[in-house]
Length: 234
Image: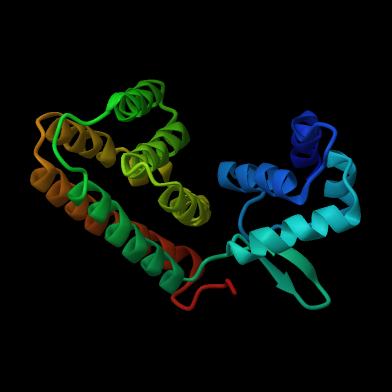
């Protein structure tokens, strides 16, 4: 925990002079997504509040926001913990992804599309793979899908999927086989990008749907072994 708290102390400057619960939640959400606080970790009010220099009430409100986003869980008389997803949670995350991401591609309209950010994260993933940074590949992969959703130019969709992708990272941290999990999707991301560059929305949607189906199967297979079929999360 000491290392994690040291990282939070570095984030203290991000809060500025107004330590709002939303800003604290943003910091904790990022730290959870990056794996600083793995699933199942108890979050200490005193330690985290001290590291960030925020009041207990502000921190509790941030915890409440993240609990609403299903990233944290409050256990009576035990405290607040980073959530451990169930297998059913993982399946539901992918069901949501399929509904939203495929709909975004289907509704893009006439080409050409603004694909600069998507191309950048494809290269980000390739660069991480060349260095053997498989967690970095996983991060780039999440960024790819975030930028894909951003093509809809909808703040509400972006906000919805920000929460979904943050939950997905909880599953990835439990699986903890980053190369096996993420390496196959570098080429799939390239194929989706090329289909969109060619203006072929139908092909891009087909590639994306197949991608998500294969990813779900792979993640659930490993996740079930790690946490058991009934899961441990609330």
